[in-house]
Image (cartoon, rainbow, N blue to C red):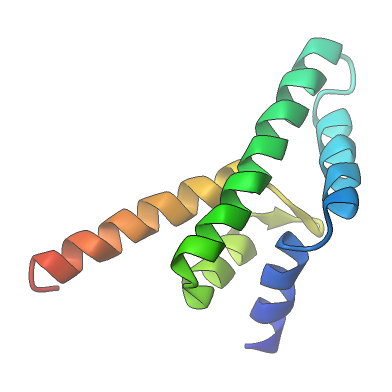
Length: 101
């Protein structure tokens, strides 16, 4: 459980650390394509902000931990996939609650 908490906390760390992480992730992923690096950085920065807002709105630490654990590769969280996972799982959870699940 502590491992999951540590991973989730890493996602919510300071903006400067996250920005450097995002730049590194995008540079590694698109090393020979500057326009894709730019697109990736913009997309990941927005996704990071969305993850932070999602957590403030929902406070579902278990779900945040599961999605963060699933979408952290080599200690680099992939924010766009974390927010996708959070949204998808939250909608499924709500549907199940409304439909007797």
